[in-house]
Length: 472
Ligand SMILES: [Zn+2]
Image (cartoon, rainbow, N blue to C red; front, side):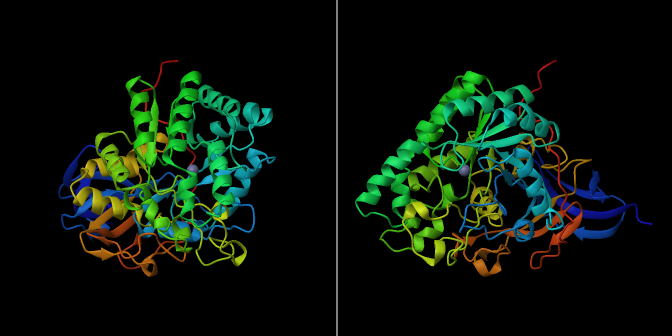
């Protein structure tokens, strides 16, 4: 009997702190030894000195999230996690979203039914709190935090989701008392509504005006307000999908004061600009309608700097999958509609890791260790999944990516999501995941998906571990 189920040989194993050549031995889905010249495994994979990183933890993605009709997400847990696996992501944290009037508990139970038997990789849930009633604040949320739902998203915009400042304070207070991580979508809803009405009244309704309705200052103001609210309650927050300079400046300012403000950004703020929403009134730009909208080249550079210098804590996809040519997608009811009625979001689960490895690490903008920190270790820590997830260490799950430095031109036809486009069509990358292992099983071998529906397990989350623990 071989001593191990699997040994990955000659791996340039890369963690958030180190990079070293070793063999990685796996038993029962976990890493049990790291070393040189390890005993044989039942299966052997030769990494041949290639970089091996922890499987990605995509801590911001939307899968099969209940929506108000006619919109419907193109990806469910089956296609979304298949796509994740083929792109080197082995843990996803989508959102169990409470509808106004609904109990949070009911939202979680419904979401479990959507995931069960379908997921190909492991998953945890964030909560979306859209209706913080006394029952939600006093009973449901504390109980759910204890059961392993230790993070939730708060929206400052979108009519069906947004909370006012008093409600945000109430929810942040629960996060403080029970040790949860609050994620905040920071855009000023009233400014957006005011601008949208003016654009509409003047007939400017093409997709590109989405960016005009959500200029940087609406994000800057809301980011500042979110920071102030978290300061008042004395609780850390994580500002999601930061898009450019003015929001970055607010976060740097808060850090300078010693406030615990974490930040996330996404590929769309590195690789897309507002021009991708269209330079004329054609409808194709609806594909890239997401919020906050992509900005410009100068803002992309600010985001790159923030990734390199530690301003950003996590790098997520914000995968929000809607077909372009679909009455349930970007053409509601089959029509080309004014920008404010286009479902918000772009797909990105499968391309997130390769975009950052190629254009970040191989292009010399960030170190391989920083890549691991942003795509796996920090998201696992922020949401209570570390050290089981997000690192290469003895005792961790054997979630691994072996990188192939081969030129890859992104084509939607080669991706495994159920969306009919990718915003990165035609982009040339210098690398792609050559193999993905999820708890020691090969789910992607560089050309073929081999995961099993239902193999992905639900992961209850512990307390966030980005900060030192207080005594008592
Ligand atoms: Zn958001």
